[in-house]
Length: 197
View (tube, helix red, strand yellow):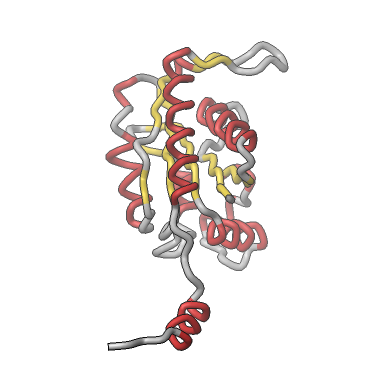
């Protein structure tokens, strides 16, 4: 199984990034391959000018195409997901998430931003034809405490429980995901089948 983890925060110190890293570690412990892309790792010119031939963008598109699922994590700014994330998502083809499981994750300054997942992020991901969109996770900033120095960030117990449950559901959805049949293989099967009336 291959999962693409997309971080939508332009900042290196990011609560949504903390959740994304926790999700990555949990999935890797279950034997899932996880490739992470952060919006800040892309050249801003490539994103703003939609340079599809950029090596970084080409690699991103190729890995998303091969992925079984995606985790998309973003901070909430002005009641919506980050603009930097939108510029990256805009590079994906129209049906880029077909046959893929998607888990949206967001963090914000207060629970007043909780609906940003359902009303801002999910519609954009649904427009890319995600096979299955999971409930998603929202955490307000008070639920994630940065560690001092190199110490790991701490999650509030209710948030940790929600994250664990969402990741178990995500992993189960990946496991039951039907594998698309290659067009050539399907054609061969049809031609070699014995039909009777």
